[in-house]
Image (cartoon, rainbow, N blue to C red; front, top):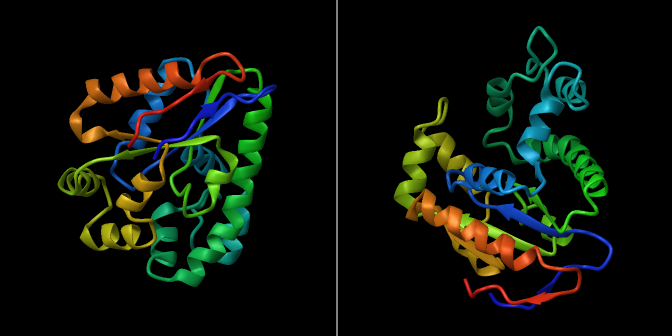
Length: 216
């Protein structure tokens, strides 16, 4: 995908970062942060919301009995078991969590409105319509065998869980087709870091300056 992009007048350029599970999204977000780009991490926001006293924890406990730990935090393993393979339960969970995460995202954008570039790290960006809040989207990808190896190396995830997660995510090929930028993290850390630097240079210009990202 190729289109002319320009930093908006009076606010930051908002770059959305997404990718299917195991594609290297978190590592890529850290590269942006290390380069000085403010990053809003939706996963980190959810972690805080799930913690003791978190804004989502009590509501989740009411909606899904038995999913809270003694300290009042969400037991992620119990919650995963409660919603895995149950679309109606997953939709109920998302209705609790997504508005809270989006509110935090809006606060983040307001705090960093003077920055030339900010990053929204959103795992289900396309699936939830999050591209409407972004000026461009970066998708991270990797070969299927690399993705699978990364995911199955994570504690608590097996082939069944991996398949269930993939089933609720937009196919990687479709994400890449819709993206403004694509980074193949399977090509290694140095390649990804170079691509991040190039994107920052492309999008971090003066307000209103046009730039043309590479075809993906």
